[in-house]
Length: 99
Image: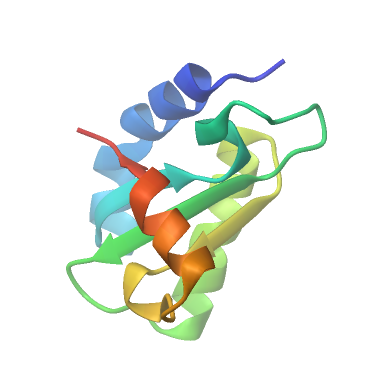
């Protein structure tokens, strides 16, 4: 089964391309993989910041690219889109950005 370490390694390996093609500044993992309660069907929850804000098509293409690279469904969001409340606070606390 895919582990958090596997996801981190894949994202780390992809970062040069993600920076060049999609203007990704930072990418962080949150959700079930960080908590350790993922299963074989779990998707990967990611928070992404950009050096240049992407248009909708570029954002969708990034999501597709990550889904293909990770071989899992991907939920992609931006920290700036998190609303106030306990769910958003939990995400902010648990997110692990690639170093």
